[in-house]
Image (cartoon, rainbow, N blue to C red; front, side):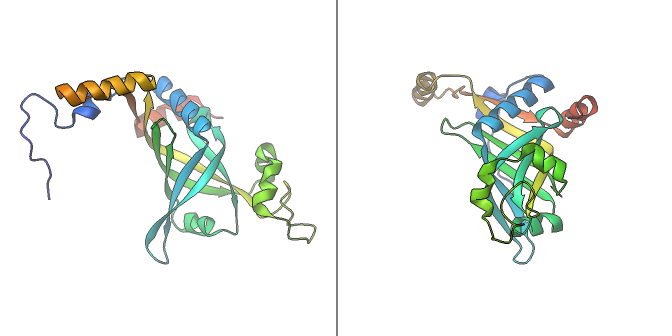
Length: 206
């Protein structure tokens, strides 16, 4: 089935994407991406539940970034279902959204890391509130709790949109478009391709 049923002549059939596409450099795109996800902090991580063949999403907090900001780290309880799901199918997507309507969609491969030095490097005491203390002197939510692991998402592609106008400026653009039919230019729509990611990895290791 095809939905390409619009005859537009010289005009693009998807004018929003065409007008808001931002021709930034690879460095500008990845640095902007890192700044956005660390400020948004919370994203919805989607995994595949193989037992039901359903896609499941959970809210996750970004613990840190790696490789110059392109890869993402999240803490996890290794006893949780998402850990089992990612071990069976490491393909994941994380969606970010803030109150201004800026958003990011990250596609990548996840791995579960239980290396204690990495966990201690990023550990925060607030994890105790999520892990709980089981009262056995071992599973206490501390940095040595063996349940604590890290989900490392190695990014493959990203699409994200950040605003380059104030709220008033955006409202003016939308109002103008409503009256004139001119597509609103309100965002910087950026795509980080697999080629961009490979190029970035070749010059960044941490």
